[in-house]
Amino acid sequence: MSNIYNLEPVTKGKVLLNTSHGDIEIELWAKEVPKACRNFVQLCLEGYYDNTIFHRLVKGFCVQGGDPTGTGTGGASIYGLFFEDEFHQRLKFNRRGLVAMANNGTPNTNGSQFFFTLGEAPELQKKHTIFGKVSGNTIYNVLRMAELETDNDERPLEPPSVKKTEILNNPFDDIIPRELPRAVGEKKKDNKKKKSQMKATKNFKLLSFGDEAEEDEEQVIQATSKTGKICSAHDKSHDSKLSSEVAISEEQLKEDRDKIKEQAVQIRAKLKKELEVKPVEVGQNLRQQNLDSLKAESEKLLNDIKGIGKEEKSEAKNEAEKDLLHLNEEEKVTVNKFRKDLKEFKLKQSEKKLKSKSDRQAQTMTFLAKFTAKLKENSTSEIDESAQLPEDLAGEEEEELLNNINLFSHSIVDVERTAKVKDASVVDDDTFEIYDPRHPINKRKREKKKGGEEKVGEDEKWKRTKLLT
Image 1 (cartoon, rainbow, N blue to C red):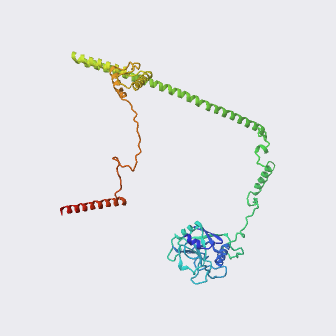
Image 2 (image 1 turned 90 degrees about the vertical axis):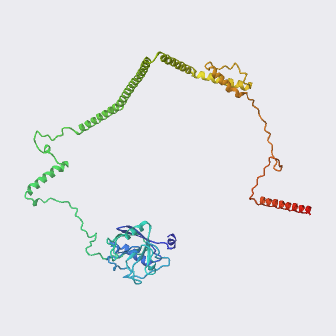
């Protein structure tokens, strides 16, 4: 589509149609088709298209309007009834969104009706005058119109309408709009009756008690004329019980209001302080209470666990003693001996365990001394007596440690490696030839070798035959 747009000339002038399906912006080719553009712009200025409908809709082809009668047979141009066609070689019916003049099927019969194209229409070329195009996203409002349902006469069941037209860019400065005749029954705004701004007056003569009402009204006017407000019985009556004076003066009222405000400020400040202090104290007390209750519960649980353990031990002892009662003397002796051995074994295991970090450090240091001594002596028989083993180690463990140290008896020899650079040209027993059999040079070598073997074989045969002869 971009190559099509580039072929079209530059537009000059823009008109906005405010329709029932949204705004439609139309850009005009005023330079290429001046008569059609001038006709369209002047009719828009005169309000010719206001409240007109789009009376024809052919899906995939066009949407037609501009007839003030709405029948498809009316409408006239600014030049009279019709004006002649205008064609341009760069304006063609090759896409949707083009705006062209409608006619009655014969050349040079353009009036006020126009249509929007909904696709390519090459059959209309040089039959209808193209004078504009729909610009921007307003093309989608035209497509919305194209989705409406129509009857058998290509007329929309609910025809869209043009509410108002507006000239956004007028390419013709010399256009003078005409005064068109108004439709029957239409009233001009200027001729509307103006409402009277006079104040209403009361006519007491219409009432049966008009005289009394008029006297009451005069009294009310006199009473309100001085003070500007309605007076009460205190002001007008001469009764001693009713006083017209104010009980509390305005100054006293102001003082009382100020006092009330100060008291309110003080009360608010006190409330803020109490709210700031009390929650903290209450929170701390609750926290302390919770901690104390948790501690008490934990201690209780620990005591219960200890008691359960003691009870289990005592129950186990009682059960063991009960079992012993059922055994013979020999069986009792064996069980007691087993228990004694088990206790001794547990004592030995506990003695072997290191009691503190200092014992571990001493043991590691003695092992390190043994290691350095063995490295220096390089023998298994001689062991440095100064490096003493820890007292906790038994005799068997000491022998096992000494046997493991035998690895240090092996002498460490630094073998001098003489790196020799081998000459590639020298052939010896360690030389291996690696070649690719698919390489052409290697193929030639193999062929030569085969040819030499065959020649040698023929020479030998010749010699043998010669000797036999």
